[in-house]
Length: 108
Image (cartoon, helix red, strand yellow):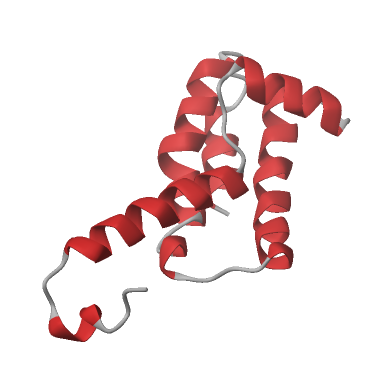
């Protein structure tokens, strides 16, 4: 929903860099809010990835996943699974540094 609203407000702006930046700075944080605190399975990640890919298909006006992957590589866009892993690793690293007695029991 955040992406569709943003995308409709952009109108016919043809600068892909602006659109990709707005997607990355507005819609993706909403889509991934607090996701790092969850243990998502592959099916759940694929569902979120599907939503993200739909937005990218609209931005780049492509219809094949191979073309989308090429566009993502050219614009240095990480997929949701990679973003989730990076965020999860940062979250767990910060969690390990806390000195909260309740959290000490959660450490492996």
